[in-house]
Amino acid sequence: MAFSRRQFSALGAGVAAATLSGAPAARAATRGPRPAVRNVVLVHGAYADGSSWAKVIPLLQAAGMNVTAVQNPLTSLADDVAATNFALARQDGPTVLVAHSYGGTVISETGLAPNVTGLVYVAARAPEAGEDYAALAAKFPTSPVTSGIVTSGGFKWIGQSAFLEDFANGVPKKEALVLYAAQGLLSTAPPTTSVAAWHQKPSWYAVSKNDRTIDPDLERFMARRMNATTIEVDSGHLSLVTHPEVITRLILRAAARG
Image (cartoon, rainbow, N blue to C red):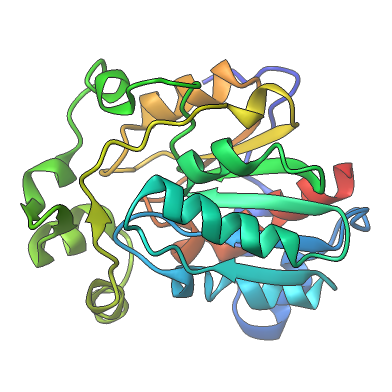
Protein backbone atom coordinates (compact mmCIF):
# COMPACT_ATOMS: atom_id res chain seq x y z
CA MET A 1 0.00 0.00 0.00
CA ALA A 2 1.28 3.47 -0.86
CA PHE A 3 1.35 5.93 2.02
CA SER A 4 0.40 9.57 1.75
CA ARG A 5 2.81 12.24 2.92
CA ARG A 6 0.99 12.25 6.29
CA GLN A 7 1.59 8.54 6.68
CA PHE A 8 4.61 6.60 7.80
CA SER A 9 5.47 2.92 8.03
CA ALA A 10 5.52 0.82 11.19
CA LEU A 11 8.28 -1.26 9.63
CA GLY A 12 11.97 -0.67 10.16
CA ALA A 13 12.76 0.84 13.54
CA GLY A 14 9.22 0.44 14.86
CA VAL A 15 9.01 -3.25 14.09
CA ALA A 16 12.56 -3.80 15.27
CA ALA A 17 11.60 -2.27 18.59
CA ALA A 18 8.70 -4.68 18.80
CA THR A 19 11.10 -7.61 18.97
CA LEU A 20 12.66 -6.33 22.18
CA SER A 21 11.56 -7.01 25.74
CA GLY A 22 12.05 -5.67 29.26
CA ALA A 23 14.09 -2.53 29.95
CA PRO A 24 15.75 -2.46 26.49
CA ALA A 25 12.27 -2.45 24.94
CA ALA A 26 11.22 0.47 27.13
CA ARG A 27 14.27 2.45 26.05
CA ALA A 28 13.75 1.60 22.38
CA ALA A 29 10.05 2.43 22.45
CA THR A 30 10.57 5.80 24.08
CA ARG A 31 13.31 7.16 21.83
CA GLY A 32 12.28 10.08 19.70
CA PRO A 33 10.98 13.63 20.10
CA ARG A 34 10.47 14.84 23.67
CA PRO A 35 6.69 14.87 24.23
CA ALA A 36 5.06 18.30 24.33
CA VAL A 37 2.09 16.68 26.08
CA ARG A 38 2.60 14.67 29.27
CA ASN A 39 -0.85 13.18 29.89
CA VAL A 40 -2.31 10.12 28.15
CA VAL A 41 -5.78 8.67 28.67
CA LEU A 42 -6.24 5.12 27.34
CA VAL A 43 -9.71 3.82 26.45
CA HIS A 44 -10.20 0.08 26.03
CA GLY A 45 -12.60 -1.59 23.64
CA ALA A 46 -15.38 -4.13 23.86
CA TYR A 47 -14.66 -7.64 25.14
CA ALA A 48 -11.77 -6.22 27.18
CA ASP A 49 -10.98 -4.02 30.16
CA GLY A 50 -8.33 -1.49 31.12
CA SER A 51 -5.75 -4.23 31.69
CA SER A 52 -5.52 -4.67 27.91
CA TRP A 53 -3.13 -1.68 28.03
CA ALA A 54 -0.85 -3.37 30.59
CA LYS A 55 2.13 -3.62 28.21
CA VAL A 56 1.78 -0.08 26.84
CA ILE A 57 1.41 1.66 30.20
CA PRO A 58 4.93 0.99 31.57
CA LEU A 59 6.51 2.04 28.28
CA LEU A 60 4.63 5.35 28.37
CA GLN A 61 5.56 5.83 32.01
CA ALA A 62 9.21 5.17 31.17
CA ALA A 63 8.93 8.07 28.72
CA GLY A 64 7.73 10.33 31.54
CA MET A 65 4.05 10.24 30.64
CA ASN A 66 1.22 10.48 33.19
CA VAL A 67 -1.07 7.60 32.19
CA THR A 68 -4.70 6.92 33.06
CA ALA A 69 -6.52 3.80 31.82
CA VAL A 70 -10.30 4.17 31.76
CA GLN A 71 -12.47 1.29 32.96
CA ASN A 72 -15.46 1.45 30.65
CA PRO A 73 -18.58 -0.17 32.11
CA LEU A 74 -19.67 -1.07 28.53
CA THR A 75 -23.29 -0.80 29.68
CA SER A 76 -24.02 1.95 27.13
CA LEU A 77 -22.13 4.49 25.04
CA ALA A 78 -23.37 7.21 27.40
CA ASP A 79 -21.89 5.38 30.39
CA ASP A 80 -18.56 4.87 28.64
CA VAL A 81 -18.47 8.52 27.57
CA ALA A 82 -19.12 9.56 31.17
CA ALA A 83 -16.26 7.37 32.44
CA THR A 84 -13.88 8.81 29.85
CA ASN A 85 -14.95 12.39 30.49
CA PHE A 86 -14.32 11.84 34.21
CA ALA A 87 -10.81 10.60 33.43
CA LEU A 88 -10.18 13.61 31.19
CA ALA A 89 -11.42 15.99 33.88
CA ARG A 90 -8.81 14.60 36.29
CA GLN A 91 -5.87 15.46 34.01
CA ASP A 92 -3.74 18.46 34.93
CA GLY A 93 -3.06 19.70 31.42
CA PRO A 94 -3.02 18.85 27.71
CA THR A 95 -3.84 15.20 27.05
CA VAL A 96 -3.58 12.67 24.22
CA LEU A 97 -6.69 10.48 24.05
CA VAL A 98 -6.11 6.93 22.82
CA ALA A 99 -8.57 4.14 22.03
CA HIS A 100 -8.62 0.53 20.92
CA SER A 101 -11.45 -1.09 18.95
CA TYR A 102 -14.94 0.01 20.16
CA GLY A 103 -13.18 2.61 22.30
CA GLY A 104 -12.74 4.63 19.12
CA THR A 105 -16.46 5.37 19.23
CA VAL A 106 -16.01 6.70 22.76
CA ILE A 107 -13.11 9.03 21.93
CA SER A 108 -14.87 10.24 18.78
CA GLU A 109 -17.61 11.45 21.14
CA THR A 110 -15.38 12.77 23.96
CA GLY A 111 -12.43 14.08 21.98
CA LEU A 112 -13.71 17.65 21.80
CA ALA A 113 -12.82 18.15 25.46
CA PRO A 114 -10.65 21.29 25.57
CA ASN A 115 -7.65 19.53 27.12
CA VAL A 116 -7.48 16.90 24.34
CA THR A 117 -4.70 17.73 21.88
CA GLY A 118 -4.91 14.66 19.67
CA LEU A 119 -6.64 11.33 19.10
CA VAL A 120 -4.93 7.98 18.56
CA TYR A 121 -6.97 5.08 17.16
CA VAL A 122 -5.58 1.55 17.53
CA ALA A 123 -7.48 -0.85 15.25
CA ALA A 124 -10.45 1.22 16.33
CA ARG A 125 -13.86 2.30 15.17
CA ALA A 126 -13.96 5.90 13.99
CA PRO A 127 -17.58 6.69 13.20
CA GLU A 128 -18.93 9.81 11.61
CA ALA A 129 -21.50 11.70 13.71
CA GLY A 130 -24.80 9.82 13.64
CA GLU A 131 -23.35 7.03 11.53
CA ASP A 132 -24.62 3.46 11.76
CA TYR A 133 -21.32 1.67 12.30
CA ALA A 134 -22.85 -1.75 11.65
CA ALA A 135 -24.10 -0.55 8.26
CA LEU A 136 -20.65 0.84 7.45
CA ALA A 137 -18.95 -2.42 8.47
CA ALA A 138 -21.40 -4.36 6.29
CA LYS A 139 -19.83 -2.74 3.21
CA PHE A 140 -16.65 -4.71 3.92
CA PRO A 141 -16.01 -8.45 4.28
CA THR A 142 -17.54 -9.99 7.39
CA SER A 143 -14.88 -10.41 10.06
CA PRO A 144 -14.31 -14.00 11.24
CA VAL A 145 -14.95 -13.09 14.89
CA THR A 146 -18.59 -12.35 14.07
CA SER A 147 -19.62 -16.00 14.08
CA GLY A 148 -18.36 -16.36 17.64
CA ILE A 149 -20.30 -13.49 19.19
CA VAL A 150 -22.92 -14.58 21.74
CA THR A 151 -25.90 -12.36 22.62
CA SER A 152 -28.07 -12.70 25.70
CA GLY A 153 -29.82 -10.46 28.23
CA GLY A 154 -29.00 -7.22 26.40
CA PHE A 155 -25.25 -7.92 26.23
CA LYS A 156 -22.86 -9.67 23.89
CA TRP A 157 -19.52 -11.38 24.30
CA ILE A 158 -17.16 -13.63 22.35
CA GLY A 159 -17.05 -17.40 22.85
CA GLN A 160 -13.72 -18.89 23.81
CA SER A 161 -12.80 -20.41 20.44
CA ALA A 162 -13.45 -17.21 18.48
CA PHE A 163 -11.79 -15.13 21.19
CA LEU A 164 -8.56 -17.11 20.93
CA GLU A 165 -8.54 -17.54 17.15
CA ASP A 166 -10.01 -14.26 15.94
CA PHE A 167 -10.05 -11.56 18.62
CA ALA A 168 -6.68 -12.46 20.14
CA ASN A 169 -4.98 -13.96 17.09
CA GLY A 170 -1.24 -13.61 17.47
CA VAL A 171 -1.39 -13.58 21.27
CA PRO A 172 0.15 -16.65 23.00
CA LYS A 173 -2.65 -18.97 24.13
CA LYS A 174 -1.84 -18.76 27.84
CA GLU A 175 -1.97 -14.96 27.72
CA ALA A 176 -5.07 -14.96 25.51
CA LEU A 177 -6.92 -17.15 28.02
CA VAL A 178 -6.27 -14.54 30.71
CA LEU A 179 -7.69 -11.83 28.45
CA TYR A 180 -10.68 -14.07 27.71
CA ALA A 181 -11.37 -14.46 31.42
CA ALA A 182 -11.32 -10.67 31.86
CA GLN A 183 -13.41 -9.75 28.83
CA GLY A 184 -16.08 -7.12 29.36
CA LEU A 185 -19.61 -7.70 28.12
CA LEU A 186 -20.84 -5.08 25.63
CA SER A 187 -24.34 -3.64 25.63
CA THR A 188 -26.35 -4.48 22.52
CA ALA A 189 -27.72 -0.91 22.41
CA PRO A 190 -26.53 0.79 19.17
CA PRO A 191 -23.63 3.15 20.08
CA THR A 192 -24.39 6.16 17.87
CA THR A 193 -22.21 9.24 18.32
CA SER A 194 -23.47 12.81 18.15
CA VAL A 195 -20.10 14.26 17.10
CA ALA A 196 -16.92 13.08 15.37
CA ALA A 197 -14.07 14.76 17.21
CA TRP A 198 -11.54 13.68 14.56
CA HIS A 199 -12.90 16.43 12.31
CA GLN A 200 -11.41 18.99 14.70
CA LYS A 201 -8.49 17.24 16.41
CA PRO A 202 -5.29 15.82 14.85
CA SER A 203 -5.60 12.06 14.56
CA TRP A 204 -3.32 9.02 14.31
CA TYR A 205 -4.32 5.49 13.34
CA ALA A 206 -2.66 2.07 13.73
CA VAL A 207 -4.09 -0.41 11.22
CA SER A 208 -3.79 -4.09 12.20
CA LYS A 209 -2.91 -5.87 8.96
CA ASN A 210 -4.04 -9.31 10.20
CA ASP A 211 -7.15 -8.17 12.06
CA ARG A 212 -9.94 -10.76 12.28
CA THR A 213 -12.27 -8.53 14.35
CA ILE A 214 -12.40 -5.32 12.27
CA ASP A 215 -11.64 -5.76 8.58
CA PRO A 216 -8.25 -4.14 7.82
CA ASP A 217 -9.65 -2.39 4.76
CA LEU A 218 -12.38 -0.86 6.92
CA GLU A 219 -9.65 0.39 9.26
CA ARG A 220 -7.80 1.89 6.27
CA PHE A 221 -11.02 3.52 5.05
CA MET A 222 -11.66 5.16 8.42
CA ALA A 223 -8.04 6.30 8.71
CA ARG A 224 -8.15 7.90 5.25
CA ARG A 225 -11.50 9.52 5.95
CA MET A 226 -10.15 11.27 9.04
CA ASN A 227 -6.89 12.14 7.27
CA ALA A 228 -5.04 10.41 10.08
CA THR A 229 -1.30 9.90 10.25
CA THR A 230 -1.31 6.15 9.72
CA ILE A 231 0.90 3.15 10.38
CA GLU A 232 0.30 -0.49 9.52
CA VAL A 233 1.22 -3.09 12.12
CA ASP A 234 1.82 -6.75 11.24
CA SER A 235 -0.55 -7.93 13.96
CA GLY A 236 -4.01 -9.14 14.77
CA HIS A 237 -6.64 -7.03 16.51
CA LEU A 238 -4.69 -6.78 19.77
CA SER A 239 -1.64 -4.89 18.54
CA LEU A 240 -1.51 -3.13 21.91
CA VAL A 241 -0.74 -6.56 23.41
CA THR A 242 1.49 -8.09 20.72
CA HIS A 243 3.29 -4.91 19.58
CA PRO A 244 3.21 -2.54 22.58
CA GLU A 245 6.46 -0.80 21.58
CA VAL A 246 5.07 0.10 18.16
CA ILE A 247 1.82 1.44 19.67
CA THR A 248 3.77 3.36 22.31
CA ARG A 249 5.89 5.02 19.63
CA LEU A 250 2.74 6.16 17.82
CA ILE A 251 1.26 7.61 21.03
CA LEU A 252 4.50 9.42 21.79
CA ARG A 253 4.53 10.83 18.26
CA ALA A 254 1.04 12.23 18.91
CA ALA A 255 2.23 13.64 22.26
CA ALA A 256 5.26 15.27 20.61
CA ARG A 257 2.94 16.95 18.11
CA GLY A 258 1.29 18.73 21.06
